[in-house]
Length: 290
Image (cartoon, rainbow, N blue to C red):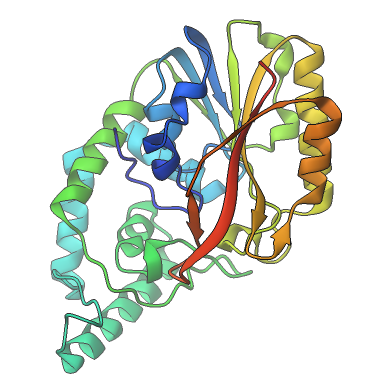
């Protein structure tokens, strides 16, 4: 499996290991992701062309970073920033790293670099910052400033490999990237040989992308309408979503699936965790019209 260099909630690495892509149609001409996220699904799907969209401007900027920048230049920039700002070169996990003074030193270095990055707003610096943020996740306040607290990770050799993976994929000539909402995607240019994979935010989860009403019931209803329109036009779609999580159920989703008689595949023993809060009992599913 090719691992994406982008860290973001809802990463489909676990589902891919459980056979997500095996459920996709064979011989895909154009693979479309209206919710591109980390890009890991596109990176591991065979197709002749890829249309990758995300309305999150930060993710779109990362796509462009990997599309237009040599991997070794990205790696060198990160290594230089680590030296310049004295960022950690080792993991500072609480259970194993006992040097409290060093942890405080790293926290101050992180905050210093975060302040610097929020002033310069350089996408490569924002990307560097993510390696040392809590859960390596991006989060921005209403002013557009990165506000995740310090985490316990570092820039590893594996991360370098993932960056090389991302640059190799996104720089291909058959990749098109967009920064828009899924409703604006033009489905009239598609035919029965194409496939649309939808990995929208999950209505019943507490991930960072759902903060401040990031995904509402209105968005959910528009998503269902979008899928129904795809089906009317004879276009294949597949959707990752979640029926239940802890004691919260997405009744809208289950009722919609029953009404339209979509095919639903379960991923047994799949567990969901948000920003290190622990595993939640979940029922993650793949919904499709073929």
